[in-house]
Image 1 (tube, rainbow, N blue to C red):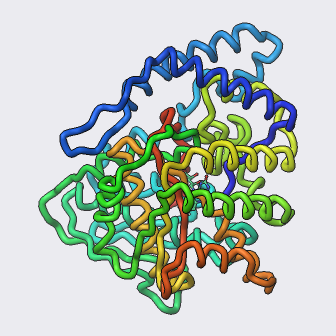
Image 2 (cartoon, rainbow, N blue to C red; image 1 turned 90 degrees about the vertical axis):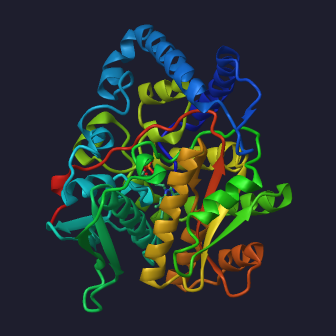
Length: 434
Ligand SMILES: Cc1cc2nc3c(=O)[nH]c(=O)nc-3n(C[C@H](O)[C@H](O)[C@H](O)COP(=O)(O)O)c2cc1C
């Protein structure tokens, strides 16, 4: 999956430099203090206060930039420079608790993480059931040729759906892949009335976002990782493998970077990903899906400049993605997590893995941790398999995992974020109900 977008390469370098300057200014401006230790013993950064300070400082900087560049003011307006993350494509993030019915629970399900923000789901809702279907029009034949991520993303939606139904006074019975004759029917949830109960994970649904920005040079304590793992132990066949030592992280980072290089050298994969990128506000308003500039974890100044610059080519965007992977994503990962399974091809296993991934992401959100899915390696594993090429990435990842009988399904990085993540767009409920 790519956190990519289209910049001319020389401007990318300038943006990265401005970003560094801005990071230094930001650190001074927000006066980040050494982290306090919570009663539970888990140190946490003062994310909330930094977030507020960043909002004020970032908005001010953006306003100065836009006001001072009249010549680009139309693109500023057109691209939502001063108003990111607002308007109809983002309504779902503020309305997901408004409706107490099962349909309201679907409003929470669509906020789940999903590959490339393709939102590959359709729902059928009655008073006593919710059925989830894969939308075949929304898969990515070259990025995800074996539909691994497609299923995992649908599992993420199942998890939000279950949490939201329980919060609305239902006890759902979840049946995965209920119809052997219809592989697009991925889950059937039968509802029985029960006392409504919310949970910290449910409360976090509207605050969870993929964070692709830099993370602080601060370890995530083992107790915190254990806490995350504890959330998924009841899901059948799902394991979590953490990479935390400097040597292990460096080894996995090297394979991720190599996979990114292989991905962008493969025109079909690169084009498949680029086709989903929404580069301006008109695209976002029209499609309400896909990755956006706002979701790339850039500093406010860099983001503003990125929106003011004209969009450029796929290859320039790929170069920027590779640079971000090297200098931000892998360079600042405090830990990597890999969800492991016995059979990566089994759809029900993938769906349970998606439930695990979403739970971990929601739990991480409650702990002020940032999380970014990073699946370049398995995208190359599946591409090599589909093309019948010699397997180069599968043995490298298997060796790093070093768990006989277990296979890596999806990978993510974790850490205390420098800045808060921004929301990504969602299609309206009417577009996903069948
Ligand atoms: C199975 C799966 C694979 C993903 N792979 C990546 C990835 O490789 N890189 C990345 O930056 N984001 C990845 N994502 C995150 C999605 O792009 C993200 O969930 C989507 O754009 C919606 O944004 P949100 O998570 O902020 O709501 C993945 C998500 C899922 C569920």
